[in-house]
Image (cartoon, rainbow, N blue to C red; front, side, top):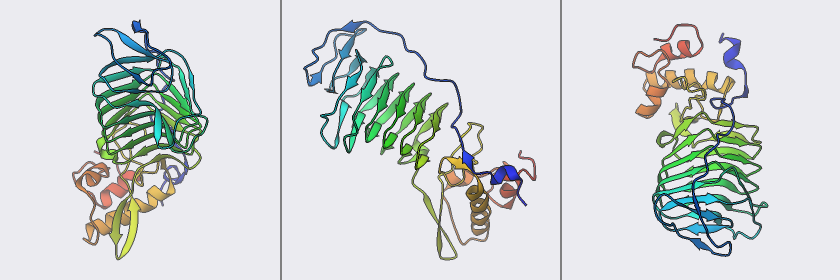
Length: 284
């Protein structure tokens, strides 16, 4: 029998660490609140943003105040980042969306080397949406009361020190292998805290959905076998079934997933990993 600790189904915080960090205030250049597109000034200064806008040039940008917006069109965002080499510093300010369908507080699309930091989003379809982008960092962001807190789709992103809470789905990862999660707090989301597309494993003709597994506490062990943002009975049940199926050759899983599930550290994925996961044998 597996130890009771394995069978406990509970909400798991992702690397629980203290709250949102404070970011210093850089020099600010003036910008018109009525402008629909902001442009970056000379180096070592920042453009102030005080309304929903599109960022189409590289540079540093800061939110000058909270933005309360109920007119953002469907399928668009309030702060739209469309340029490479952009830093958006929210200075702790709020982007409030008033619940308009299929909108985003911050929408990064088709850009690279972008940092979004130190802001809050609520009442959007997506608090922060990273789409078709590369080398994007989202840090010190608080999202709540959104349908999706942070959505990373067809992108590689680093998520650091974010709090994602009290929404429907907390964090949505299109491809978890491309993303780096550090010290985030993701909790009290109604449907699921972390969602990543499942890997389908064929076991004796039955499609079993597992993974990609997640390391929720940053200890290098991917105890969340099913990748649903929680550890519990389904992880304990799924792991031995998949291990047996892989061992006897009736199922296969990607090499990255095999490595993540190597709980006993012997370089293989087999029954020894099931025992190590259950705490019945020491891991290497």
